[in-house]
Each structure stands twice: as structure tokens, then as C-alpha cells.
Length: 145
Image (cartoon, rainbow, N blue to C red; front, side):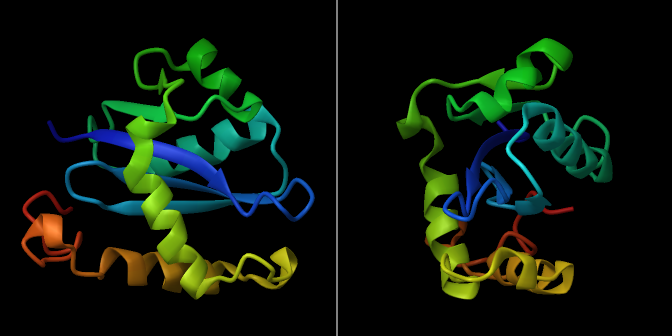
């Protein structure tokens, strides 16, 4: 059903700075947030900011990889966030990361990537037609908001 997400961190090669990428499994709607570090509390606060921008009850669950940066989710928001120990269960977010790196190169200087650049990259991902959506994009699909 609708409202189930996959999430991971990307851009891990540049010290501890990273992007948290989450994608809704059915609509393929993508959200990206910039994190200054990989501390679990910091990552959680930024992802909860994304969740708070969504309509009520939009996010029912989220499957993460087993990194330590996600440990706080199970402790503080058990009604919303689930832990996943199986990377094959989050294939869509991994595919999305590959597309994201076409717009923001992995070897870019993390601090040179502005919020505007990140918004543009997110818009490109959400406007990209997907075969699984009958070549509609996540913004125009049946489950968009």
C-alpha cells in the first residue's frame, strides 16, 4: 500500500557529511535532506523535518539499511519507523541514488552543494518519467501530493 518508504544515506565518501534520501515505494516520490554528520540524532531530526512537511499519516513506515546512523529511529518513533536488515528490500532508493549522482557528482565538494542545487536535483528526480508508473512521473502519478 501507499505510505511505505525506503531510506539510506549517500555521499558517504566525504568525511561524515551526507544526504539522507527517502523514496515512497508506490509513487516513487523522493525527498532528500543534507546532513552535516552521521550521528543518529542529527539524521533523525533532519528526516523528521521531511516527515513533518508531508500530509498527516502520509508516512506509515520506512525501511533503512543497518547503519548506526539509524539507531535512534527504533527508540523514538516506533509507530512510524521500521528497521530493515535486508538491503534487497530497498532497491528503489539505491536506484534513485544512482540517478541522483548524475546531477550531483559523488566527488563534488560537499560544502559547494547548495540547498538550491539539492532542490533542483530533487525536482529532477520527481519529474522523471518512470516505466513502473506508466511513464508518468512521481509528481503527476496517482499518489502524488
